[in-house]
Every structure is written in C-alpha cells, then in structure tokens.
Image (cartoon, rainbow, N blue to C red; front, side, top):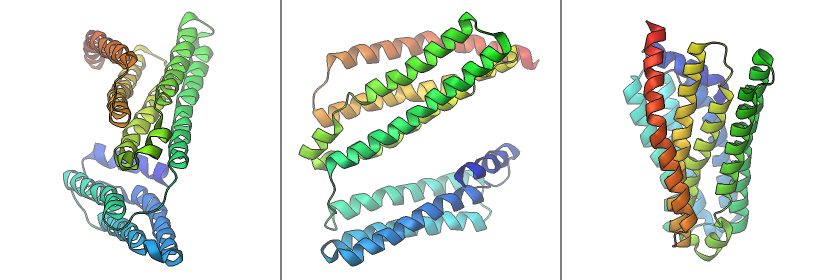
Length: 280
C-alpha cells in the first residue's frame, strides 16, 4: 500500500495542489496499529513492565491519529510536511520515554543488532537488482561493450563496498556492553539504510536510450550517491560514538569520499549546462 500510494503523492506535488498522501498514510497506519495491539498484548502478559508497554502504545496511537487527520483535511504541502515532522518526532520520542522514564523493556543486544544488519542486507539487495536491471538494458541496446562491463563493475563494487563498510562496526558487542548507546545507534540506522536504498534506486534508474535520458539518469544517480556519502560520515561518527576511538582507515576512506565528491562538481555543472541546452 505504501508503494501504491507513492505515485499519487508525487503527482499531487507536481500539480501544486494539496498533498495526496491518503493511500500511503493508510498503508503506514495499518502497520503501526498492528504494533499498538502487540504492545497492549505485552502489557497484559508482563505486569512489571506494563507502564513502558502502555507508553509505546500511546505514543504510536497519537501519531497514527495525526496521520489519519491528514487524510480528511486539505492541508497545503508546506503544512503537511510540518505536521509530518511533528508526528515523526512523536513516534521517535515514544521509545525514548518508555525506555528511560517508564521502566524500559528487556532486549537482547546481539539479536537487535542482527535484525538491523539483516535489514541492511535486504536494502543492499536493491543495489544488486538495480545493477542487473541497468546491465540488462545496456546489453539489450548496445550489446556487450566496455560501458556494460563498467556498469557491472561499478554497481557491484559499490554494493559490496557498502556491505563491507557497514559490517566494520561491531554493533552487537558494543550495545551489549553499553546499552545506553542504543538510541543513537538505532536512529542512525534509519539514515544509513535509507541511503543504501536510495543508492540502489539510483542504480536502477540507469537504462539509457538517448543523450537527454543519459543526463537525467546521471543526475538521479548523483543524488543517492551524495546521500550515501553523507551517510558514510554518519556511519563514521556512529563508529566513534560507539567504540570511542577513531580508526585511521576511516580517515583514508573519508578523505577519498570527500575527494570524489569534490571532483564530481565540475562534472555536475557540465551536466546541468547540457540539460539546459537539450531543453532549449
């Protein structure tokens, strides 16, 4: 339902009318309401931690009411974005209050880290799928050429590189010893996984049929790669926060990432000029 609602959401933004997020919100609310019932079930079965469970359920419920209100009222795009930001903060604040002020819940550090790591692996699969889709399109149009080989090497190398970097962080061991660092680690996963998925989507948008489409594809690639570059800084900061030390390997990786971004700016400016010429 989330995926089905995305085209209507972007169409409403392009047309400049109110934000049509009804189907997307409905898909999200269905998942979160199910979580409310799970927390109520946990509160019933674990009286000692009932207060924390109720805090989770209340925070989620308040946020879902806010999401549903957006469906029935015609807010402007700016107002919808502002309300969405408030609702996201409510959802993120619920676990902090429940775990720090209302008794908390028991959780296994290695299990939680494994769940997030496997989620990242699923997200990295987008990079593989995107590379295969791009390679198939290039081979179908041009045959096996050097461009096709470079697409394969670059897409696969980028995906496995992200995989390697992600697993350099000893999350389970650190969270087991320092459970108070879990919130910064957990919320940072949202940024990292989002960037991984965005990079995979950028790889998937690469079928090329003309010069104009090639330019637009490269623009779409650059945005996810910038987000991935930013997430690498986030990952390095997270590494320092958890381990409380800084590996010199990260200095080299950050320097190389920054250098590549700096070298790409002249290329982006040339792409912008080419896009304007094509439009004219």
